[in-house]
Image 1 (cartoon, rainbow, N blue to C red):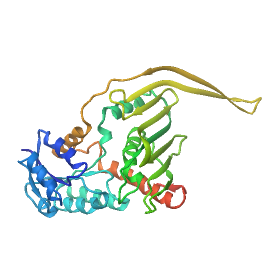
Image 2: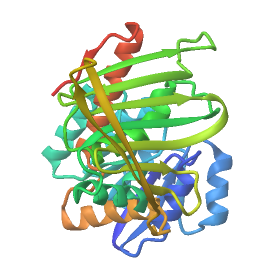
Image 3: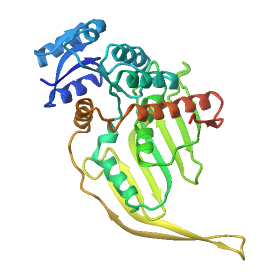
Image 4: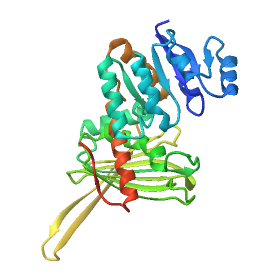
Length: 337
């Protein structure tokens, strides 16, 4: 049977997690907890071998569970993960990891103290598109990085407990931190709530670095079109990553510019370069399958997963700073080192 998995939450993302853990060779999903009877009935129909319960404590106390997968709202993550770690269970948490830096740090300390794996489901870090972009940056194909510009917008889904940055930006923040080795130093963010409930549905965030690299994020629940696009500029080549493309998600443009000082006109002279476009072939393996596989293998081998707890903490650190900046009209907020 291998590692015995318990899943908490069978709402939007839970079914995807359950399906991919059921496909793993070295583990078995033994328990699922959800407060809604109709959701548990659905599991009983689809996966009759899996025990179901409305009681989280019943799942956490079960000897048939070695590791917990948490797919519940953000405000519940800390308490559930803390209880699981204290009971000696390994934990995989849906993104974002927690609602505060302090909570994330507490969970990391608890995991280290008990010798347990704590992982965050930043699914994009397991996609072939992101791996290809990492390769292009690492082997200097792109050259010195200059900017990262992300747009993640659509119409809906308004969240009742977190703003649009907490909902959508974790994907792209995790990608940014994975691709860029330099650590950010500060954040500026602005946003607005058109529903007048204090939860921003449109927000813009800039992540600042010590060098001349810069990252920008555009997130919205109120766009007439759905866009999932990231532009990455280097001094040799540029990348366009469109996650909505079925097959041609990554395109590398042999495009750029050179400049020199024009002393006579007290300005600069810019020379533009436009060359070929290269579209690499990417694997079609479902990323969430690789997330589940990494979690199981990390437990079995006692190794840190790609999307480690530290990765989760770094994302939360930026989100918390962005929230503070929004509440202070875009004021620059230094990141905790």
